[in-house]
Amino acid sequence: MLADLSAKTLAGKLAAKEISCREAALEHLSRIARLNSELNAFITVCEQECLSQADAAQALIDSGDAGPLTGVPIALKDNISTRDIRTTCASNMLRSYIPPYDATVAEKLKAEGLVVLGKTNMDEFAMGGSTETGAFGVCHNPWAPSRSAGGSSGGSAAAVSAGMAPLALGSDTGGSIRQPASLCGVVGFKPTYGRCSRFGLVAFASSLDQIGPIARSVEDAAWCAQAITGHDRREATSLPLPPIDASRVSQGSLKGKRFGVPKQLTGESFAPAVIAVLESAIKAFESAGASVEEIDLPTIAYGVTTYYIIAPAEASSNLARFDGVRFGHRAEGKDHIHFVERSRAEGFGHEVKMRVLIGTYALSAGYYDAYYGKATQVRARMAAEFDQALRGLDAILSPTCPITAFELGSLSDDPLAIKLLDYCAIPANMGGFPAISIPGGLSEGLPVGLQLLGKRTQDEALLALAFAAEQSLGATAKPPVA
Image (tube, rainbow, N blue to C red; front, side, top):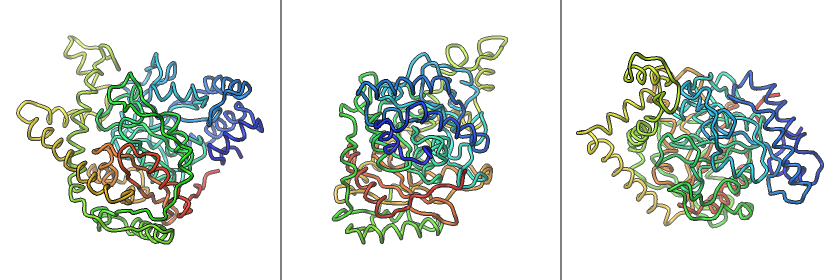
């Protein structure tokens, strides 16, 4: 079945003309039609655009102008702008918004000849850790539909895990690619901040946001990362570096490599099953010739607190544009103030309103230095601490998430518990480091992810390590979906 193939294998069959791009697209559209009512991984499926792009990709192959992934279907998180395709951010504020332009990553994918299947479910404006806060319903985990797919890129992770798409893009502000990848048993990669353009990504927290791929193998993630990375003159924080070179990834080896495991990321707050998978991985790494040592990174304790000052503060600024005048849902009102109040009250959901209020307070006169200013100081110290640790290491190893996939609704009354799911992932965003989650194994039939965090701009080295770790662990498995 085509839906079982890796993206690289599928690309090889397309290039050899064993199958056509239209056949590959129709196979995945059929699987989406069969599974989406159960999983709700997609908000929008763009069948006509998909088939048109498949025909264009076939023309590239026929003319000999194909790239490494030409004709491979891909799904995009619904906060990535796509020309003439609805982009909702899973919010009533943008329920009917159709962008007039493509994000840079969407442009690059089209130029490479990848075929967009549709837009995936997410937490509203990427605010959440379970894909339960959106306006289009919750997303279900393919491994156990009563459980969460994680968030905020839960739709992208669920779609790849269930074989509805061989590749997907997500966005990662505090672990939103890696955490759902961990809970759904797939690979999620957050590149170095600035390696991938954010132009056209609907902003949540601009200094933390990063687009990245979700795939079923490290090699697939690397080839997708190669397609979407590179300098973009339209984006001020874009690094002047070439695209990631995926050809080096399969040369990775664990022999002689040094890993550090922060003692702050193995404590009693982690599920025993998660720690057991981590300990098995350490043994596998050492058997392959690597050394693993415990390290001390005390600023990790302040990561979640700091994140929940910086991210809401930047969100309150970014979301101010959605007032119903120029952008977003427009309500009726007796005067301008009433009109804006009603537009924002009707357009935003509870989680977004809460974060906008927190952020506005943190930035207000008299409180800026005490909250946002102090948080940026802690962030700088955390980044310096990780930089120092990485001088003697090849990567920092930890669980991706403290627990496995949880029952939907079980943490709804405990917002702190949801936020702590990103405890391991947030430091990568704080310092702009590249980080990747790979499947580490199963516990009671549910996936457990392992995170590798590497040096800034050394994305290829991190992907090569992750490839070698993936080979050593052999933990790839498929969920029980038909």
